[in-house]
Amino acid sequence: MTKLQADKHTEHFSESTGKGRGDKRVSFPPDEEIVSGFAEYKDTQNADGCYTVADISSAYEQSCVKHQVQPNLKVLEQIKLVTTVGTRAGCLDLRGERLDYCSCESLEAILKSVQFDSINLQETELEENGASSLLEMILYYESACQLNVSSNLRMGPTGWSALSRLTRQSSCLWRLDACNMPMVEYPAQALSKALLASRLTVLHLEKASLSGRPLFTLVGALKKNAVLQELCLASNDLNSYQDSMHLGELLKNNCSLRSLDLSNNLIADEGLEEMCDGLKYQHSGLRSLVLFNNQITHAGMVPMANVLPHLRTLENLKLDQNKLKDEGIHILKEAFMRNRSILQLGLADTQITCEGAVALAEFLAESPQIRRLDVRRNHILCGGLMAVSLALRINASLIALDLDLTSKPEKDSETAKGVNTVRVLACSVSSCAGVTVIDGTGSPTAVLYICSILCSFHPVFRLQWPPLEMTQTDRNASHLVSYQACTWSGPCYCNCYCYCDRDRSSCCLRHCCRC
Image 1 (cartoon, one colour):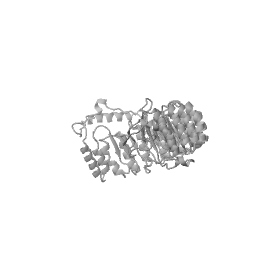
Image 2 (cartoon, rainbow, N blue to C red):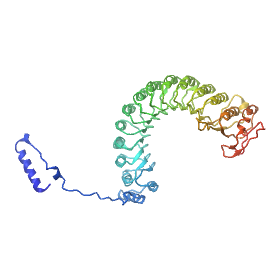
Image 3 (tube, rainbow, N blue to C red):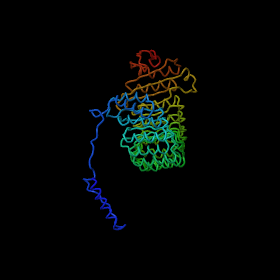
Image 4 (tube, rainbow, N blue to C red):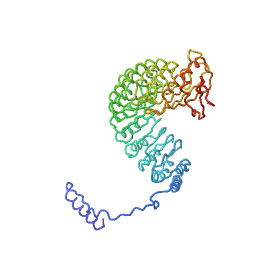
């Protein structure tokens, strides 16, 4: 605007204001006269439009000098690994490096030049101002698709506010890890508000002290979230009362979740019943439910057995380290048979004996889809293993069976004599299975029997068996495998070769070259 135009405008404004307080008016010049000129942007990059790795390193070092901090050698080494500037690099790993405010400011020279798939800020001792500054940079430059800010206990309200804006506004961030950071009051409110509009699909909040009101606030937002697919709330001391009721509400109202990890909490039988009320509504959503170590007993399997047949998409169920015992397996057996979706079942350290193994064998014989079963750290002896081996003759879907690597003592001292460790690895090349793995033992008799079943229908068989003195019981059982397993010759598990003599009653199962 020229001086003459400004004078006329001032005069016009004075005349209009002199007519009275109710007649005040403001006028502006025409649009074409508001902007008098502009300057072209000067591109400071290379002619090809991108920086080189050397330029980035140099810019970072100059930024460190400006902010009076020493260049981080770990950062410089990772910059050298960047192959192409202009595309996302792999990971910027700053875990364990102390980042004060000036160190965070100096990183802008890198973040404005290189974008990363993931940035790890775990245990970097971020303070309030430094966290706010660094997270604002990550948002502005869209620097990360995955971000880990775990174990930073001094971020403060300003830092959490910046993390909330990043979560809500970033167009590329799809995973956030904020573990081992107490989320009480403002942090829980800020993150919950951000989740109402975020694009996150994976959220890990382990050891975040969520029990009580923080979980209520978080669930309130997640009930309206239709994007999040994986949620980990492990080790938060979630109880069997209000917390379990909130989780039940989450399962009832959110159908976008695909994975829910509640490991190492205090859900117990009463809490599981509350959750099962919400699970009834998961007809086409949840695929993985992890209840590892939650003080659940066989009593909690009653509501679980009622809801399992109705879960059509649940593929992974982990009940490890809960005192289910044989009674719990008997309660679940019919529900497992009626369910047609579970592919992986975790029952490690659930105090199962041979009786429970027999019930599982009945399930294996009936299941057309189960692919992995974990029963490690249970007291399953010869009888249970034999029942499982018979079920394997019928089952055509199982590709992994996890058993203990160390044997359990049996009442039959002759059977248990001299047994330390037996590992059987059987491979299937059938049309419906890839590799069948049995890690474990019981007695040599039981393992020999399992081997006979595996050899009867698996065209490729690989075995490692430490040399041991076979008892009379084992010799009586060895005829089961002498003409089946001995038809194979080739590399053992230890990559040596052994060949079997069909005319002998014992075979490579007993002695295998240098195994």
